Length: 198
Ligand SMILES: [Fe+2]
Ligand SMILES: [Fe+2]
Image 1 (cartoon, rainbow, N blue to C red):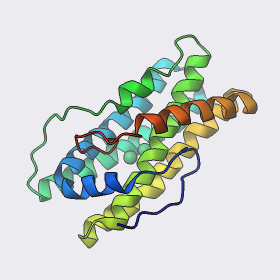
Image 2 (image 1 turned 180 degrees about the horizontal axis):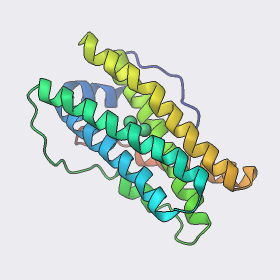
Image 3 (image 1 turned 90 degrees about the vertical axis):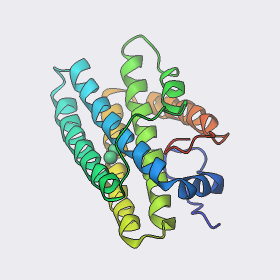
């Protein structure tokens, strides 16, 4: 199976063809997990607002992202309804928890790490939703995934800008390389459960 080899800026290694095959073979589970990803992305944006309520620029940028992620959540839920897939909990893959372990606990390093981890998750989502858009045979669902890609690209850009506006550029770049290396190694072995971030 042909998979785009272009590496998204930020990501150390591209997604493997095995992930695409796994996802296409379990599309309803992927859609259900994707809904959870959008819900969690809205929650992450809200948690930044809760944690840093006096940072006006950050609150403004993340309010917009939270609203957009919730809109995506509603759109994915419409697809689930259309395909007769009931909403329900789904055990997450280890990806999110493993990335959170990389976040340093002391400020201001904590804020830098949280912004960069969020940027990396958004970048990986952008890449994988794009792969779904490229390979799903249902043209309408494929179009939906392609349409989401632009938003996810804007989101990882927004988290990156927030980081570079608050921390010295060389520090942000060094930390990004370390976190991106960890992110790629978490995904190096395909998780047996089909998930957006398996
Ligand atoms: Fe989204
Ligand atoms: Fe996003």
